[in-house]
Image 1 (cartoon, rainbow, N blue to C red):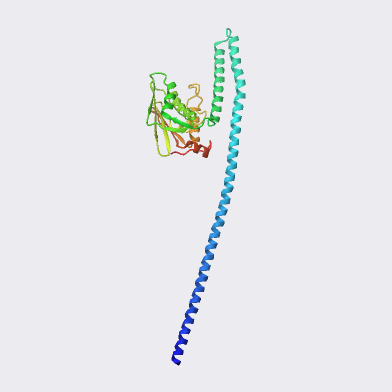
Image 2: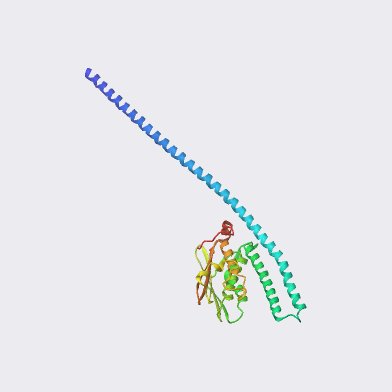
Length: 312
């Protein structure tokens, strides 16, 4: 019996020791888990504060961007209005100068010397050029303000109508090549782009037989068009210059041009989120290519008129 009681005592003692150790282990594990939990909570709270700080910075930047966009639109509107008013006001004295030159020429027709008549002709030509430059400036500043909405346009049918006035005889050949798409776009602006590129290809062409090839292909994201000519070509150093408004490669006394056609085309295309480029070889000809995303209406709302486009 004493042995039995002693065994019970030993068993109880072992049980107490095990229970105590288990309790200690559980307490330690609990403290460890609680410590880890606190660390996790602290890390989450730290990340939360960092995200809140970043969001506050982004919100501030968005506010600044919105303010900048509003101010930019207001400035552009003011500039367009200024150009329109200035052009109108300048044309009045120009017309007066032109009329006065014509009046002098008529009144003094019998006594006017040949040299003086040449000066009057030069004066009238300069007045006419200034009037055209003002018209070109107004066109360039307001070209993207078309009131025409996007519509379904068959580009092959559109081009067939555009090229007719340019074919003045057998010495001018304009060919269409490729599967021209039907696209949703502002037809008036697209017509302006094609007309300006075709006119550029023919106006500066020094060949007896002028040839223009208009081709197209498209990707999953973009429409791509090219206008190729057999003209004199363009030196690479002038690639950027030809797209700047009023810039011409020849003096206007040699070839009367306003230097606004390519600038207008570039502005329209970039407003669609696209890009225009030129690849040329001297003595062989030039290829003007442009591309723009399929959904031009969405792109136009997102980027505004002054943003640069991106090639597809």
